[in-house]
Amino acid sequence: MKTVAIACQKGGVGKTMLAVNLAGVAAAAGLEPVLLDFDPQASAAQWGESQPGPDRLAVASAAAAMVDSILAKVEASGAGLAILDTSPSADGANVGLMAAADLILIPVRPCAADLRGLRNTARMVAVAGKPAFVVLNTVAPNGARLAEEAGDVVRGGGLQLAPVVIHQRAAFARAFNCGLSAWALEAQTRSASAAADEIGALWLWLRGQLQL
Image (tube, rainbow, N blue to C red; front, top):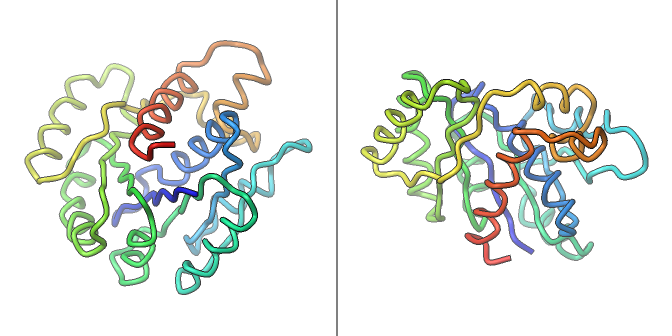
């Protein structure tokens, strides 16, 4: 089993959205993912409870202090991927979650507040000692210039940048409100979705990084 931590010291960057949608596409790939919600706000766990139908993703609230034993149980259950949705803090518990992962994804929006917050997250990554990549998230569809400039800031700060940009799209919000991932919504409606395409592209890259 592989483990991915979605982490950023700053709140409001779209960690849960990214976690939910990566879990959805991983499920479609047959990996039987488990989404573990370590954020006291429990947004992912609440989304999990809102899922319709019988084919529900495995989502559970979890305590950071128990991460090692929880991951052992998840792996024993036959899951191929664990996704850790972390809280927006820079405490030791989050560093422990990062250290328990094989890879860390750091979602940020291309705005000054988020980019400044990367300094604290970068320090946490250094302590955790695991490979980490910044994902530019909720970028405006016409925000190519902003994304390019943000990418320069990320690389200048010594962090690696994922090659796929996730844009702000109505399909992400619609899917989340329905208890679905963008990938599942596309399959349900049988209509092409740029949101699903972007998450699919990010997943293909991530799968290669994890050697799944």
